[in-house]
Image 1 (cartoon, rainbow, N blue to C red):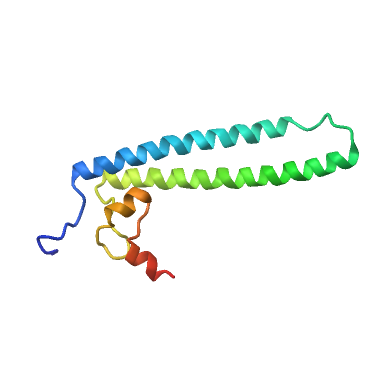
Image 2 (cartoon, one colour):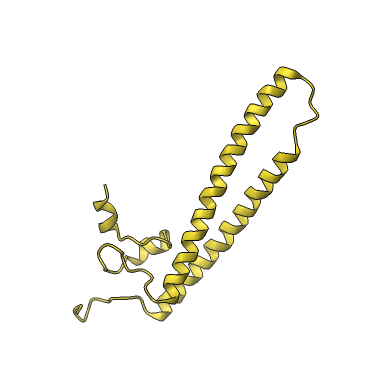
Length: 128
């Protein structure tokens, strides 16, 4: 059993505080994903009416690269959203903020900066 002055989990009010942070980050992330998706959809509709051959080839190459980068950003954003949603589940079952390696509480400052993390700094540093 943990000694009395070492908490084993965050209180409900602390969990609510983290939940608010995560919900706000989730709202912003979903807006950004929606914007990226709209950009991808618009880029599919453009670029068929230019007749200058060489210029068009360069433009197509640039558009393809831009589209790939936008796709990567969208994929990263989806993963971030999935991680935030998983953090909400951990809040609901009161396991949020507990390091999956050490079993200790992750520092509040770290959780505020990276609210979807499942590793304490101590455990993260061991990975390198």
